[in-house]
Image (cartoon, rainbow, N blue to C red):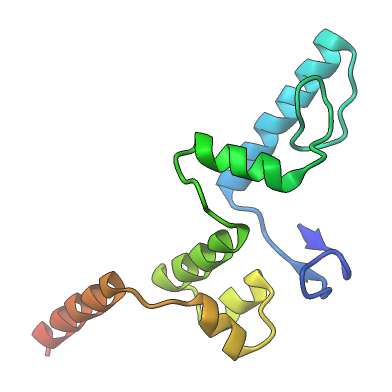
Length: 135
């Protein structure tokens, strides 16, 4: 997917390739919109909507409601960005590529999102053990 300049947080355009999970979610949303059009005659141009194709007018209210229903009250949008950075690094995506995907322009800001946990340290120790045993 191409994110046009001015449409991102830092206003820079970039390419963001869809994962199979993102494609699956978007397909399901399109199927729901198609069903709404077929059964109710309502054309809904939004990916996510309320009731009969009505737009979500108060995003943060909808966000809080969705988080409560998902069992994660208090979650904020930037939690997803932080999780994305950590997941990219954990699976071995080079940090420069991860920065490009998340739109971080500077190493300093990227590092704020790349929080190292106790689990990360334990994983690193286990990897060192494996490498040490091979020498």
